[in-house]
Image (cartoon, rainbow, N blue to C red; front, side, top):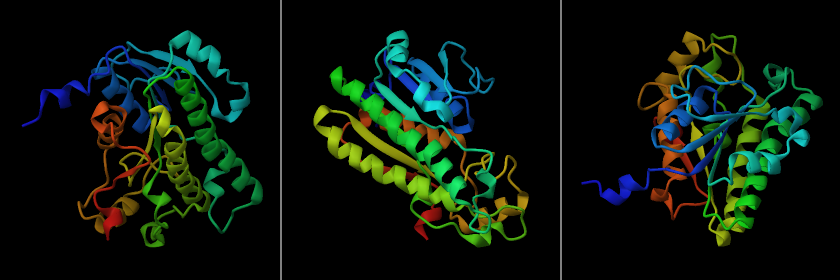
Length: 264
């Protein structure tokens, strides 16, 4: 039987929840779930209010992680409120992202995408954690990583498709996982928890192309114990858990949601 305290801890009433990439595929699922739990949601994204977010009772802050130096977070906090929870589900990349296979990788592609993705995740997480620390907030930070932060990409998945491996993706996502551990070590004494979620393949999402190929989906499902890709809502459920008080003794963890892909 589920205790009342467990259910109560999923209520984010009057909590300020900031979600980077909150208009995206996974981000909009996270946003919808937070809104259903009565949070004060602030979506930070390049994309304006998205039809995927069913409830329009949230605040939108347009932000471009490609120009992070120009973002004044102090003004954002002053306008929208001191953060209680920060989630980063953004997916910043440059125009050469699809060329980041080992066969076509250039130094500038490597450097630029690490700066856009890994460095923006690291810097924004520090900004939010420092603000929580100064305000003595018992906060929670959740960063989106990937099973490819733990594993190499199986090239067999791309056979018979136009897709290829991405040399930079695993580098970025593994960096996020260990950065979370380092942040948890430093900010734990300030009652700020920092964790990551690593999804496997998600329907409708591809790091290489906008549309997943049927052959890739078949290859991926055949390798996964649950015989399917995941859904964005299944990732969102785990993010909400880590943001809630139900995970009050969890920090520095990387929780995997991949249908068993990484277990074999």
